[in-house]
Image (cartoon, rainbow, N blue to C red; front, side):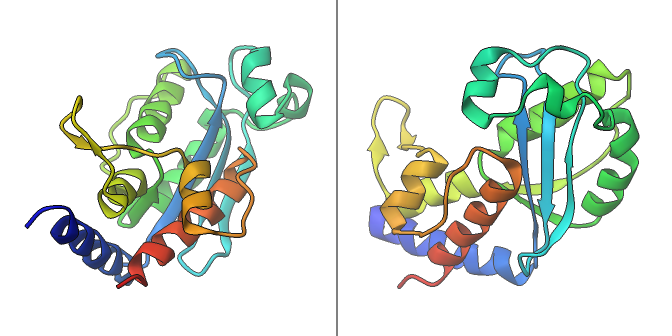
Amino acid sequence: MGREHDRRAAIAQAQIELNKKPIYLDTETTGLKDTDQIVEICLLEHDGSIAFQSLVKPTVKIPPDATRVHHITDAMVSAAPMWSELWPQIETLLTMRRIAIYNAEYDVRLLKQSHLAHHLSWSTAISHFCIMKLYAQFRGDWNSRAGNYRWHSLDDARAQCGLDLPNAHRAHADTLLARALLHYVATQR
């Protein structure tokens, strides 16, 4: 047992997830707090084609700190549809699909927070898995303080695996990178 066993289990799980032909999801947001909202979303099909991509007009201003990360400005989203307008199409794409997300807890929380900001009730049951946690198990850097494998940023994972894709902190680029990372883990021995 141990780390090598866990690494092999992560590889096997990545192969299982790929066989389910997941849809990849990534968002960019107004920030990290419990009141922040989505300003960009991308859903990428298992074959790498875009299923859905849009800027999203939030109900609040985009803070400069967030703009410094993803380079999305209030001017860029001023004519974009609001979350409540986009959700019916997004929900249709996510329903009955396996969803692959790098840092799933965060993105799912932001989906729910965007719902709340637009006075929508969250009733969607989504089947998702976290590529970040799977990669942490694959990588095998033990975090004794937390009692689990250390999580890595998407950019760190990209560099560690030698993937030649940018981490642009934009939803489309990050879904492509998450997809490439899952494929990388699944093809290791």
